[in-house]
View 1 (cartoon, helix red, strand yellow):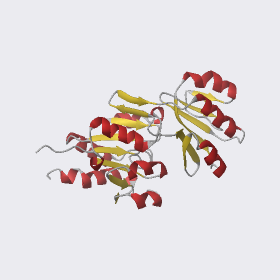
View 2: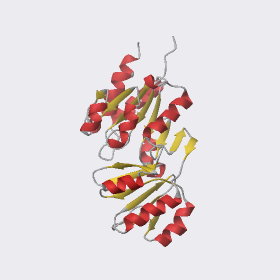
View 3: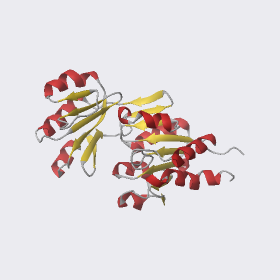
View 4: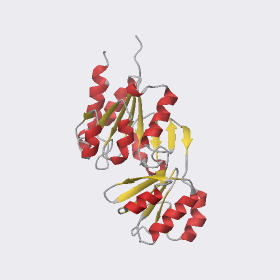
Length: 257
């Protein structure tokens, strides 16, 4: 009897990756799961340009959902590419530049910062609206972030056209209608895999929609409490190979079923 395939979607930071490295147990488990005929995808808020090349080379995956679902790739084939509206970027940038906040832009191919306050390893460093007009029109921005915390009024105003996620020290912006879950659903439909055979793993607030819409949801042991409450299973911490532990439990151990 032919086994049905699983599709696994992994957040990067503090899930697949911990303290700048991917535990070897995660890599070996991913290899095993894929050798059994299943699919494994990275599903990250990072734009494609912000994913360390070392991860893409080291971790054997079938594709990437990047930039909160704005950039979808299966192998070398890009099946969706969405950029933030240039006028919307200008409005957000003008608003937060007045506060002297760090503003970051993550593109499909490059990353940019305004008022970085410290040296950054980026292709472009821009510091003024003039730079915006000359540089930003040349590239595609998948998502952006603003340092610090947004006010309730800012959430309401910018929420008309964006989805925002507040983290401890910064807030993320992506166009409305996008997110980790919509990107995941497009991949599942493309592959013909039902929700019941979908496993998602994460640790933070921007993983919530992906985890809620997966058939099996896994929170890392280091996940925030709000994420642990909505998940099917709580694995060990990311640094201890939480991804590997969950893959062992839900796929590898059931190989003989």
